Image (cartoon, rainbow, N blue to C red; front, side, top):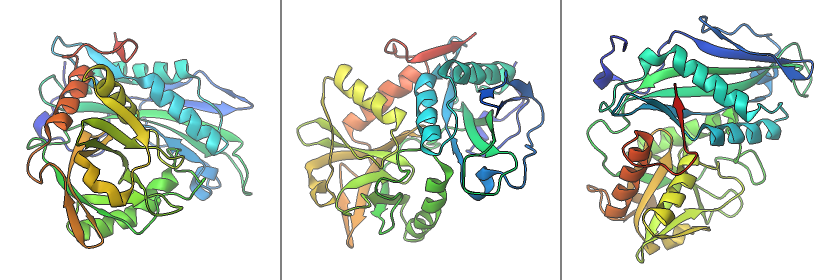
Length: 339
């Protein structure tokens, strides 16, 4: 039985749901974990998460299909990425099976919050790991918490998918050889000010160039970039300081295996924007945000259109969106059904 929620009015905002999963790491191991009602965490004032940024998080969505099934999209990939982030900031691994089990427990316990098929709304899961316990020096925490909570969220494009414009930022999202490939909070804190400046100039967000040479496109706000060349190749940047997007790698697979396109992960030079006839940003929230134009050095470079989505971008979006909602057959292993 669904909750009495106006699914059409949902945005991307916090809402307390019934239960969340909490597990504690102490003395070298994770406990069994449990579902709890309380959405407040009591942690030491000296926790490393508060002072030294020893924390990381993930984001994934839960979808209801036409026949009422509830499914997760590639949660094993989120688990692997969480562990890569944990290792980068000296936190213990979370076993992939435990991660998926925790997500499934949270979904089952809050099944009434999974929006109905056809609304475009989904249930968003936010797993995270934080360093806690009494600590003062710059060193790994003595204890850790792994938490998964969920929130129903509305469709990203309420009025239909339309292209938006971005501007190139003079700020860096991450340092060379820094934490750019880890999903740690510090990367997002650092992005808030450049985002504000971009919005004040009338753009949806900013695009970050590589921090070493400022010649190559890296990320689009908190999403990954892709472009479609004039000869129909799917191109996306390759760099050690880009967060590896699960959506991006899914689109790369679909472009090659479902659409028969050539796919390349390589340098994307900001001075060569005219090699692309379409461009987009991809991530969990929107799947794909079509890029109408990119402002660089006072000039707006327009791709397919500032008003209409390019045909290949639209086809990629419809294919992945269809897989997530169960309308298109998924590649083996991509879907975990919650029973």
